[in-house]
Length: 326
Ligand SMILES: NC(=O)c1ccc[n+]([C@@H]2O[C@H](COP(=O)([O-])OP(=O)(O)OC[C@H]3O[C@@H](n4cnc5c(N)ncnc54)[C@H](O)[C@@H]3O)[C@@H](O)[C@H]2O)c1
Image (cartoon, rainbow, N blue to C red; front, side, top):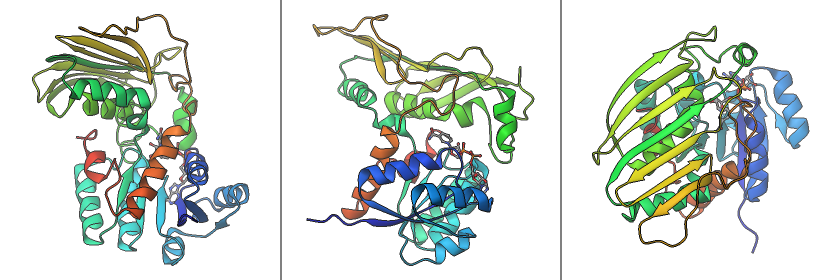
């Protein structure tokens, strides 16, 4: 049986758009028809590489009847405007993180998706990693006992050149925040995914080492709804950049992950244990923003196609996408 292929388009042909085009191709469920970018030459180069059309504007892309799903890969501050346009055109949306950068923008997106009955998948690829899911299952099943502490540490390195390159990075208007809103959002989303809803946050944020408007360093103390407490540490200013680490501690067990590698798994009564120090270092984006794999994007784009085929919500719908920004 030939599976249905969804007509597909991309807005914004910069760094991350390649992950979308390649992931879409890998699922076998998308037919990339056309792309657009405010920089015409970027769209043309991309179209040549991925054998599709380059069109002159988002409006032109939205007019096409042969496109059903659109990935939004523009700077974060444009996500809301773009998402609302795409929803108004009745097309389903795959949107890069963060879904938007203010509460007002998020509310406008939720309304547009509802009014036009379109689905949205917010990219949050960590949630699709096998070991993150394994940890979540153990936590949700109560194996760790009462949860006591949940920490995430993201001590990254991004150079001044990195910030200067896009023009939009490090600005309030288009990045919406720094070490936490941009680089840290995956870690924050994963922490709240594992630990459950957040009750309160107290934070210190500073711009210590980069010439940018937003924070390059922040530490937050979090209280979760289940009573556990924890910390979120994020920076983009430390050399050489240390892989992200999650630490979940309960009265009956502890799990730590460095990126998606389990570095500690010790649960009362279980004979299988993993001890810290036994693991090889895998791909991580601690000091290189593009040093991460495509598997997460493949799973998310596949999940979006399956959601449309079976008329269900994608796993990280707009309501899930809102959580790490809150
Ligand atoms: N999931 C991840 O791990 C991940 C990784 C990197 C970036 N991102 C997210 O992807 C988004 C884009 O980041 P990037 O690193 O690819 O940025 P980038 O600057 O490399 O690319 C953005 C592209 O959008 C184009 N553009 C800007 N405004 C536009 C508009 N109004 N209409 C059409 N095109 C427009 C630019 O010309 C550029 O080609 C950001 O929201 C970022 O947070 C996610």
